[in-house]
Image (cartoon, rainbow, N blue to C red; front, top):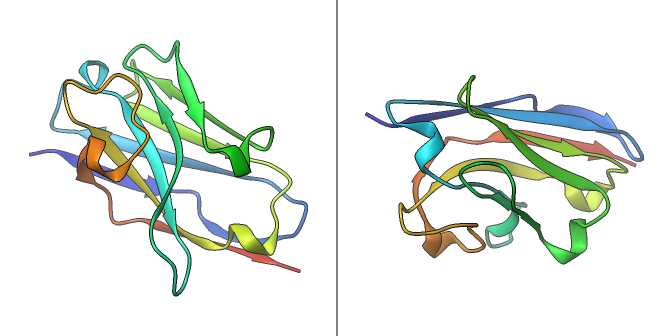
Amino acid sequence: QVQLVESGGGLVQAGGSLRLSCAASGQTFSSYGMGWFRQAPGKEREFVAGINRSGSLTYIADSMKGRFTISRDNAKNTVTLQMNSLSPEDTAVYYCARAKVWVAVPRTSDHMDYWGKGTLVTVSS
């Protein structure tokens, strides 16, 4: 059974950094693209970042380019989201998700088939 478990969320001051991790199990991790999404209170879930199977290709949402980086370690079955220069607008629950097998670099929720339960990131002003 596929399981995705996020960690690393918490409270951080504006301008600070956080590193989120997602541990995957129950699958051949290197066979799937992975992505991060977020959902702020009262808002729809939005795409944050995607990465292909090998980690050679990534895509970051425009509003986060230059601040967020996605990476993966296929030996450890983990995908990481490094977030820098955080602002209160980045406050949200962040979700790790697995891409459908035919998707190279995921960019939308429709590209994903399994989701973690999320980790809360709160950025104080």
